[in-house]
Amino acid sequence: MSRVYNFSAGPAMLPQAVLEIAQREMLDWHGSGMSIMEMSHRGKEFTTMAEKAEADLRELMSIPDNYKVLFLQGGASTQFAMIPMNLLRGKTSVDYINTGDWSKKAIAEAKHYCQVNIAASSEHNGFTSAPSQSQLTLDPNAAYVHYVPNETIRGVEFDYIPDTGDVPLVADMSSTILSRPVDVSRFGMIYAGAQKNIGPAGLTLVIIRDDLLGETLAGTPTMFDYKIHADYGSMYNTPPTYGFYLAGLVFAWLRAQGGLVAMAELNRRKAEKLYAAIDGDAFYTNPVALNQRSWMNVPFTLSDATLDAAFLQQAESRGLVTLKGHRSVGGMRASIYNAMPEAGVDALIAFMAQFSQGNCE
Ligand SMILES: *Cc1c(COP(=O)(O)O)cnc(C)c1O
Image 1 (cartoon, helix red, strand yellow):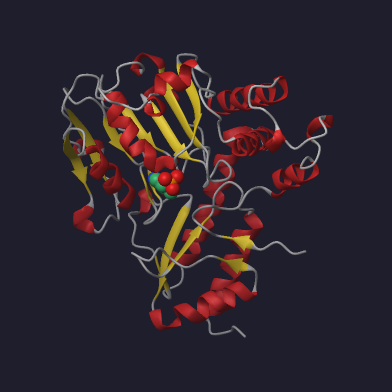
Image 2 (tube, rainbow, N blue to C red):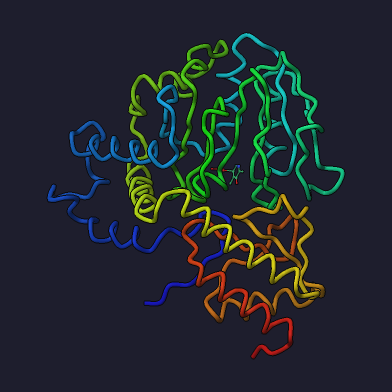
């Protein structure tokens, strides 16, 4: 069996060591005689596993005690609606920063519930940068400020955490969570779909300050109320048990790698060498402002787009797969999350140099 280097934006690669543990434990989890998939989520075995997963995540991210960690379903996209339902708390307007495709989806959904002010937008430059703090027009009466620290499709990542004063800051960290340490206390809420940097699709992580719970919009479904999930320890109904388990294995793996400080060092190195390869070769281009280039998603174009198909096909024959850019952007995109080994980035860089020199095949 040979594993490829999978540059998919999501669902994305998982650490091989994690998959191997899951494989070993598939038929008999810790001597229980059954798969963890076959177990009651209310049994001692599952709840012990779940508690350890949460504790490991809290340790990794240094999550303060006054924050709840929720393991939900529905993907980050469901959060686009749950956020206004839960966080308006009697207010009628919200601030959103628009830095790309996911920002826009979040904005469109929030508009169903309240007035949305655009605090800043980088649409004018084709979403190739993020606004600076001084460019944000923030309303002190907004219920919250929402932004996407890392825009997955165009590879734009904020190089700072916006200062929103007393207004809670809400971040869609789907494609950057766990890539480096982050000061959780700066946020009212952090959320992420799991399938990029946490585990398999089907699990959604929410980290929320506890004073923001319990004041939902009238008519909010029970399943959309964060307080319900917090009160029941994410077990109001059946959580996505297998995703929960795999996320727990990933958290333990991250701790064994040295935690988020070590991951940040590795991720910075992987990203810097890939951008250096792009910038150092006139055949490749990345249009994003230098200090706002994503460590996780690296889009680039070839100077001759008629060679795109040949690039993809020859990359694939070398075990470098899913490099095709998002359909709205074209070109290529290499997603290099935590689970992408540095050797995968090195192999991509070597192939890119060969290809641009016409030395392939
Ligand atoms: C992938 C992604 C989403 C969508 O996540 P789903 O779990 O598929 O709903 C939302 N926001 C960002 C930043 C993403 O990268």
